[in-house]
Image (cartoon, rainbow, N blue to C red):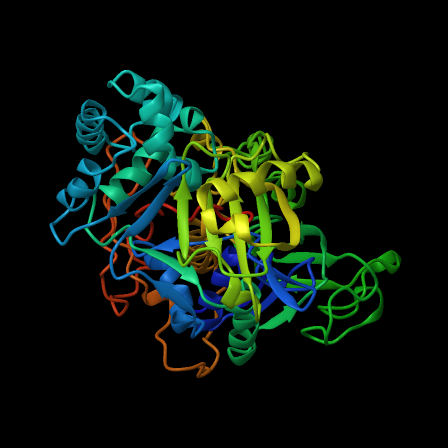
Length: 563
């Protein structure tokens, strides 16, 4: 397949970063434009009082092979801590229990942990085992699962209110950023089957050891520069237009695009092909004194669904009469509701726990993480409380949250009673992830659109995964693959640029994404992924099974408040 020509990637989150890297490695002339002054999208950091603070807590699992492949490509594998085996302390005001896997093969590897889970009675634990076996038999590809609530399904299989709150919510709320009973059954089954019932090491938890801004944004900017791509920050895209006069008529295969940026000089640094007045150059100022314009052979829209709906050229995406194609279009994308995440940050004058992270039940606290080292705190301890599905907290003043969460932390960590709080603040991501409720899957579009040279990326697109960091990276790979195929059909491919050495890591496209064929007439959804698969597998970007396997948990904060 010939290399793509000139490509504009709109959006610098994990999806856009991944697509830009993959296309640059394939020889495309890539320009990445992002409205924010930094790369990384929803995984970002900021400075506060000399500390580096992440906007939310992100974690990943060993089964997140695409995200781990991105870390490897960025040279950041050593900047995260990945457990040798799944091990989580679950705290409650009256005590704690430990969930730790054994070396037995899945799903037996968590049997001992379940038997010792003292917050449930013996009868409740046995009922959990029966429900887990029933979930293992589900096929998430079946369309009817998209219409069902997880809570209804669990209740019908003997999972009472206490069991759902004290065990099932530990994993599904943080993974799907949706109240446990309201979660989409198909996505919940994907989470549980892959992360908890699949390979024994699939759920081993990884956490960043450095600020997210360094882990993703700065590392990606450096790699893209080495690959010869242009990164334009503070460059908001105002419009994407299809230019008339393609080889097969306006909007036909081989069409070109005009990407217009807001402002007279949007984005730092030189324009890719020089500037010229009134659109005289491929990247000149637009007519009417509008922002600069970039002409491109292909476009990746790696932006949230509402933004994609506004920026997509009229009639060039599914769901429009002009496109002649079916599938969810901009009207359906706008129906995708979002769910908030709130993070409560507390800094104590002394260490109050030696746990790197913990889950909590019977408490407003959901998950808590020790951020002392990554933030650069020199004395005391910095704990971040991550609250998924945070509709009840997102509009509560910080003073009221302080009154609620400081006593709750003292209930979980007795040493807090002797400590002094030196700082307390709150970060909020109001649109952190999709609201992953029944019916959401039918609204998620594929990467390809009716215009072969225009593709979509983002964890909100149809990857078969929840809206997580892993889903975002997989969407970027999907977009790069679809764009290369679309541009090849349109005859817009060209000779690849000379390869640019960007370090010892293999191409991002070499990440193994094992999958399975969908059932006839069913929505494709992936099979389990063994997180121990090597990263030097054949290039899956152009294979028949490029998409697969769910991100069981992208951590208590999902991808938003965290992706």
